[in-house]
Image 1 (cartoon, helix red, strand yellow):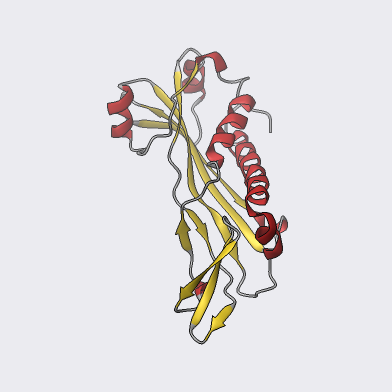
Image 2 (cartoon, rainbow, N blue to C red):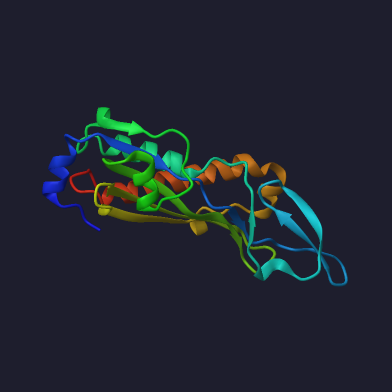
Amino acid sequence: MPLDKEELARLKNEEIRVVIYQPPRFLYQAQAPYFGAGVAGVFNPVTGGFTGGMAADPRSQVFAIDSPLEDPATQVKNVFIKGVANQLDVARLIQAGEPLSDDDAQALQKKFGGGIVLDFKTNTWGVLSSPMITAPYQLVYLGRSRLLRLSDGRVLWQAQCSYDGRNREAYLDQFKVNSTPVLKEKFAEAAESCAKQLLAQFPGTQK
C-alpha cells in the first residue's frame, strides 16, 4: 500500500508512536532419527537437544515452541528508523515501550487515543527442514510494517517483507553444537534484509 505524497508531507510534522508486537511462537520442523519401532526423537534447533516419545515421524509436521531468541522485529524497527530519517523527523518518533499483544486498530485507539502509529510485526519466524536427513535447515521470516492513523483507523502505508534462508544454510550439526548463537546470527541477517525491503517500499528513501 503506497503512501500518498500529501500524507507524507503532513507526517513530517506529526509525532508518531513506534510500536512492535509480541511475536508468534517460533516454528520448527524437526528431523527425526528413530530410537525404536514407532518412536522418534525430535531435534529442537533452539535448545540443541532431542525430545523422545513422539509416536509418529514428525518430519512432515511443524511445531510451535517458545523461544529465548529476541524477536527480529526489534532489529527491523531499528534499521528502518535509521533508513527513513530523510523522510520522517526521527525526533518525533516516540517509542511505545513494551511489545503490544493486539495490532487491531480499535485496540490501538483504546490504548493511545489518536495520533499516528508506525508499527512492526513478526508474522512468522522459524526453522524448517528438508525431508532428507542430510539437507540443511531453512530459516524463514515474514514481517509487516504500516503507518496507521488512529482517528479514523485508516492505514496510510503498509508493506511486507520476507526472508528465505535457503542460500544461507545452517546444517543440523551447527545447531546441535551451538544452536542459539547460530540462530541469532541468521535472524540478524533476516531482520537486516527485511528492513531494507520495507525501506525500498517507503517513498523517498534510498533504494
